[in-house]
Image 1 (cartoon, rainbow, N blue to C red):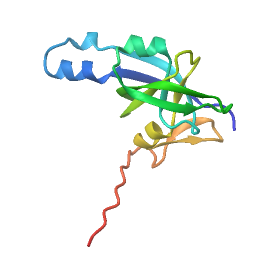
Image 2: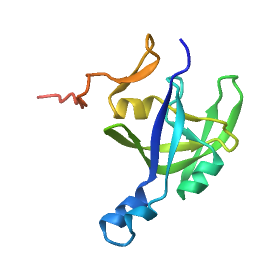
Image 3: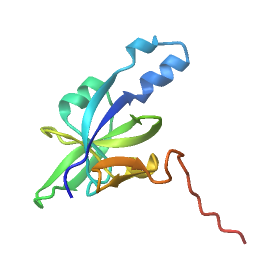
Length: 141
């Protein structure tokens, strides 16, 4: 399978909350439109230090990650970031790989937006077509 790239808008959700409370004008929300590599081998969103700073994100912790070449590194884990793709959105924590050359869109945000990779056409598509379907299994006693 080849590489699948997609356009995303990433937003600082704290800024968005401040807009709703009337504390910040909409045009001051820190956001970036990026081209991301869809990486079903990655868990979450991966951004670099420059994008982390541009979005003004806070660090919530650290995680030890393993790269595809089996190298290991301790990386910052951010507060949730708003990810917007077409008419879909999700909030997930991002891993900051300081010198990452690409933004990676991993499986958690894909699942959250009900998206999958169409390997034939090499693009993202809705798992359930144009309708976002949220599934929850509830056990009845």
